[in-house]
Length: 73
Image (cartoon, rainbow, N blue to C red; front, side):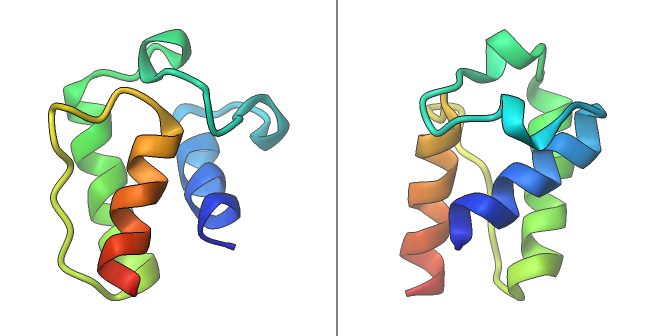
C-alpha cells in the first residue's frame, strides 16, 4: 500500500506512467534530482500525515518506501 501511494506521488511529480516505477527503480533513472525529492517528500508528508525528510542516502524507490514505512509504523 505504501509503495503504491509513493509510486503514484512520484509519477504525478515527474509526469510518467506509474507502471514505469518499480521498487528497485533508481531516482537517477527517472531523472529525479534533489529538488524533486524534496517536493516528493512534502507530498509524502501530506499524503501520510507524517513529518518526513528525505535523506541523501536514498537512491531507489525502495529506499524511500522503507523510510516512509518506518515513520508510518
